Image 1 (cartoon, one colour):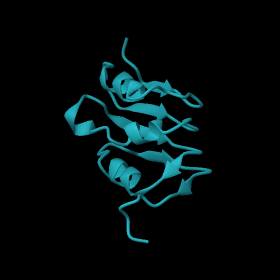
Image 2 (spheres, helix red, strand yellow):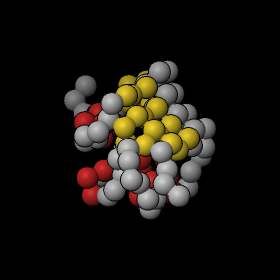
Image 3 (cartoon, one colour):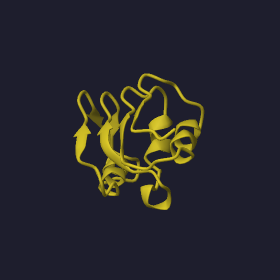
Image 4 (cartoon, one colour):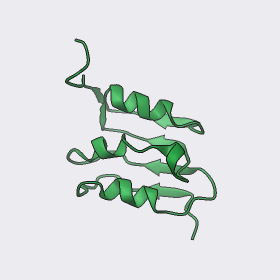
Length: 100
């Protein structure tokens, strides 16, 4: 089965579960990934994904109601095939190492 869309919003994941799910799927094309309203700190694992080091290709990302920070901005800038981004209801939070 080749995924074209993965909707995993409103889920509280164990550490690295979401990352592992994304990295061990077969992708023939870019996918629409909806990870809106991630519960807990799983978003931190998500933004450490390295799309260039796997077959993961995200063409559309829905990140609604999650935290935005500089790590997230670095993550989306690494998504070479990203055509659409939804970030409704997000709050920008500085990382501890970011200048105020």
